[in-house]
Length: 171
Length: 171
DNA sequence: GCTTGAAGCTGCGGATATCGCAACCGCGAG
DNA sequence: CTCGCGGTTGCGATATCCGCAGCTTCAAGC
Image (cartoon, protein in one colour):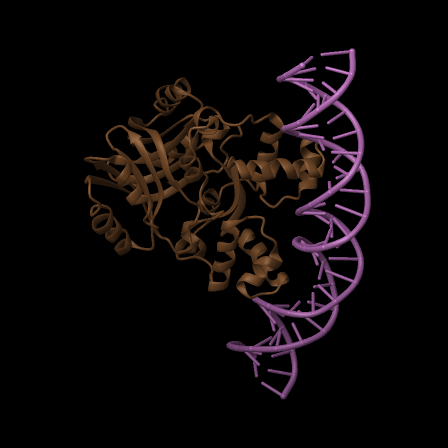
């Protein structure tokens, strides 16, 4: 339940100010707290407090509120290669009919790590994480193309991941 | 320093078995530990130990090793929308000359969250995170296209994020 | 078969961190 | 001025983290 992604959460919630504008007032101190936790998600509240100029208890409350509001979550992220997923690809999808329902069908597939509706020559972009070539082939040709409404797909197999950060919101 | 992404770390290291095959022996217990930390990155070691059938100290050692090896990292991830980034896009890039050096130039830009070399009709796929339309325009037209070797780009502006998980390695 | 060494687990105690709570402050509304 | 509220602080009680010593397992070497 807590594993539900931030994005899913914000997708589900109605159009409160959180999803409409920049979100709930995020002052510089909360930003600084987030930066601390982006460096080390297990850093003690007292150490964070010292870094941002707040007491331990104040940091604790703010972190809890940020988690409750869905502004951030603290999770373990893994390198796909080292946990046995050797083939990844970005797949551009063209849809006829309702794009959103296709997006939901793709999002329901565990191999689809990332599903986003886009403007441009693709209606959807989907990141697929697979164990090997056979698995990738099966997912793209048998599962994704089998979804009703999918007109065509174009695949971009990953050769080398050059950068991946989780530093949104701190610049 | 700890904020260095998993991907960067595995990209930097030489071709040990970690980057070549499926990685360092990940048994079922370590997998279970990772799953626990994907649900809650701050879960106490004792609670994890109870869940996976290990002592608190053993869990602690395994987690530390997983972090040291770069198999996983524990970080805060935020929802870009709620922290003030309202425009995102996937950008496909075509390159003439050395693809890798272009990839590195793009990876050096803070707005590029994700840079991957691909096979297919694009040489690179880049995810860009921006504050607004002006910012996005500036990054794509003035910064990315200005990188020597970039022949052309095609943009896919995000309309709606439907799924984003951090559950690699647990299925 | 015995030794040796490395790797991994356990249990334990001292140092730390977390948590809940009551009190305190600043500030706008009435 | 007073009231109420959100956010903060300080402080004990409890739980967690951390380092260490000892135990077991297992494979290598002789």
